[in-house]
Each structure stands twice: as C-alpha cells, then as structure tokens.
Image 1 (cartoon, helix red, strand yellow):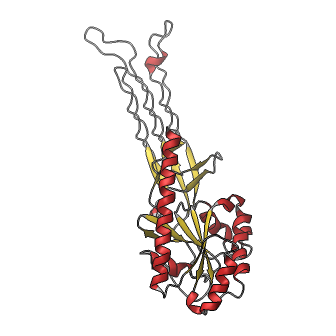
Image 2 (cartoon, rainbow, N blue to C red):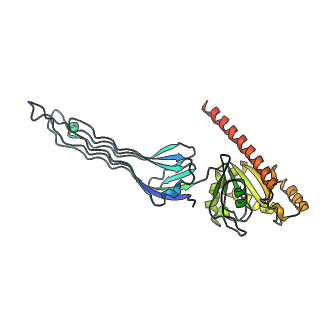
Image 3 (cartoon, rainbow, N blue to C red):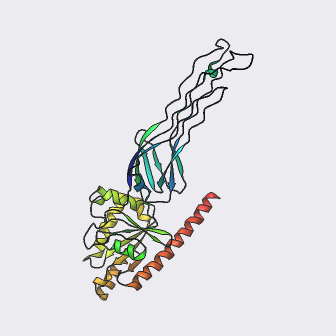
Length: 335
C-alpha cells in the first residue's frame, strides 16, 4: 500500500520547573538560595530520508512528543534539557503547520527542519536573589512546549514517470523494465495509486492515468498530477491502437501544463505502446505523426523483448547522463 497523504500531531517538550533550594554547609545552616533553573524542553524536527514508502508506517502512530526538561536542582544546578524528537519523512514531502501556516519542503536527503520549539525552563529561587531580597522563595514553572497539527503531502521525487491516459500500458511497461509488480488490467483506472520500480538504482513511477479535466481535480486529478511535478523526466505513453495519437497525446499534455506550466521544459519522451496491436505500416504512420511533437519517439510492446531492451538501454543511458550533469552542477554551486 502506498500512502502519500498524512496528518499527524506533535508536541515539543515542556520546560522543567525552577525550584526553591537552600545552601546547606557546615557552620551555615541557613545558607543562601541555591535553586537551579529547569532544563529546556526538546524541540521537534522533520528529516528527509530516501524511503518513499515510509508514510505507511505512520498510519497507526500519528502522535509524536519530544522529551520535557528536568526540574532544576539544588546547589545552583540546572535541570537536564529534554531530548529532541526527529520525525523521518520521505524526500519530496511537503509539510504544512495548520496552527501557524508554516510550510516546509523536504527536497534533499538528510535535510532537517525544526517545526516546534521546546519550552524554556523555569527559574529557580537563586535567580531572584537581590540586595533587598536575600532569601527569595519565588520560582517559576517551565513553559509548555509548542503543539501543532501537520498535514503531509508527498510529491514523488522520482527519476522518470510514466504518464498517459488510463489503460495506456504504463503499468505493463513498469513491470517489464523493473522489478515492480504494478497491477495490470485491460480496463481504465487499474492503477489507483503510484507504483514504483527500480532500474539500476533509478526510480521509475507509474503515475495513475490522467483524463480530461484532471487539472481541475476530475478523476483524482490533483492527487495524481502533483506527483508529476517533481518527476525529472516524463515517459508519455500513447497507445498504438488509439484512433488519433496526436489528439491522445495532447489530452494528457494539456492537463499537465494546465496544472503547472513550468513542466513544459521538463524532458519528455513519447512511447508508442502496444505496437503489437497494429500493423507495421500503421505503426510507421503513427510514429511519423508523433515525431512532429517530440524529438524522441520510441515504439515498444511488452510482448517484444527486443523493443523493451531497446527502450531500457536508451532510458538508462539518458538517466545516467542527466544524473552526472546534476552532480556536476551541484559541485559547481558549492564551489
């Protein structure tokens, strides 16, 4: 089961109370004030990890608490600070603090963001000592830690995503190229949630079929389209048995651009799928039409091992090329 939405609550640790204590020494039975301050409560953080299936673990555990600070002690000793609490979330998570309106995007592995502050420790009676108040009995309690309700939305940060109308052959291709086991059926909307597969260390995603009106939310459009936003590369599946491959292509392409116009610059290959269902002449004609839309049109059928191998080789070469370019750019940014 793939979970891409979650709501959880979290509470930072309370500050420890300040205390009233008196110094006791030989010959000084009534020494001065020595009550220490309370320790600070632990903070709450979120941390990005490479585990796209992580949210499913939180279905039954949705409340998180940092440790409270300890009370102050005698001999002017401060209480121990509470331990922080770190909530691991998948890379690509967008976390919204419903109480304060803050928004956090976890885009890189290891990224850490503080979402709640622990409470300050209270003051012990030594703090209140003065020239006119030499035996203070005042102290203050620790401050409560912050509380919050947080919504999590996961936008898949995958290397390549299969997009297309329902029943365009996306799931079959993902299974043929990777070790995924996406459900396959000869009817629309077989895939109701994204499925992932591994291709030599690169993550491929089968994005559920898009329909006209998806950008306005029709057919769970917004839920599915947000996963396309962060996909590095689009593999646009157009079935060869479509009566008008150009129209079929534009149906999905237009929905993607209506949802986010910036995706126009994203690398996109067109895959003419299910080529076993048309004649060689019809296949050539449809490839010719699609070539007017993209520089890269690749015919493929999961029933043809040679065509699958050709697609695999082209895809791995492109992903390795773009990955090395990204690493070089990252090094250049850090220099």
